[in-house]
Length: 239
Length: 90
Image (tube, rainbow over all chains, first blue to last red; front, side, top):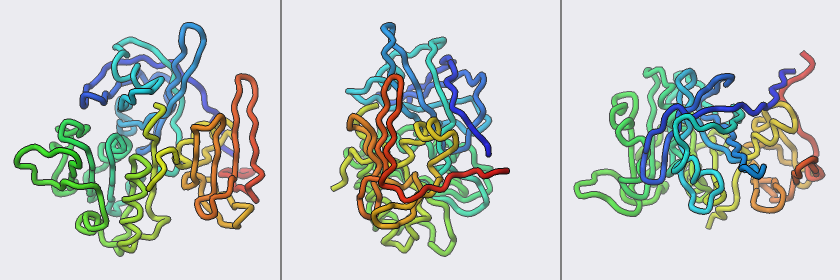
C-alpha cells in the first residue's frame, strides 16, 4: 500500500505572467515538490496575520518536469484568487500541497486526444498540451467570452500545427475578421471537431459546471461512451 | 439549467487524500440507495454548505457528508454500500 500523505510545503513565487486582465500565471519554487502528472491540481493555503487560513485548489499549468506553474483566475468575491492574481510578488511565500487527483490525468499512449475547455478550464488541458511528445494528434476546442479573455493565446497559436489543431469560440464578443466559432459549445460544433468514436480518443472536458454538462451531453449525443469522457467542473464562486 | 453550485469529485481530491491517505478520485463506490457503482471523480459534490455533501450521480441520494472543524473531522458515509480503494497488502 502506497501511502501518499499530503504535506504542506512552503513555496515562493519565482515569476508571474499576466495572461489576461483577470488571469495570471505564477511560477513557483518547487523545492520538495514530488512532481505531478498532466491534469492534476494542487491546493494553496494562505494564512493571515491573525491565523485565519483559506485553502483553494488550482490546476497545474506546467508540464511534468518543467518549472511548476499554476494559472489563476480572479473571482471577485474570492478569498484566495485576488491575492494570487493581483498581489503576490516574486519572493512572496505561501503553502501548497499536492499533487492531487488521479482521474483527470492524461498519459500519452498515442491515441488521439480531444481537449474541451471553457475559460480557465483550459489550464489543466495546457499542462497536457505542454507535455505532449508531439507525435500524438490533439484537437482542442476552447471557449472564451472575448478575445481578451483567451488564456495562453500566443502560445496556443505558436504550438498549433499538424499534430495540434486549435478551434476557438468567442461567445460574447468577436473582433473584426474573426473566423472561429461565435456561440456556446453545442452538439453541432462537437460533431465538426470531435474524433470519430471508433478512434477511441481520450477526452478531457474542463470548465464551469454548465459548460462541462453541455459539452459532455453533446459528446454523448455523438455516440461517445459517457465513461470515456473525463470531466472536471469548477465553481463559479468561492475561489 | 445546470446548477453552478454542483461540482464533481475532483474537487474533494485533496480532502479525501488527506483523510484516507490514498488518491481517492479514482476509487470506486457503490451507492447504498440505487446500487450503482461509480468512481469518486464523477460524483456530485456541493461544497458551499457548512460541510461538504456528496451525492450519487444516478439517484441523487446523499452518499457522504464531511464536516471539518479546527480540531476534528466528522465523516458520514452512511449513503455508501462500499468503497474500493487503490492499494492492497503488497
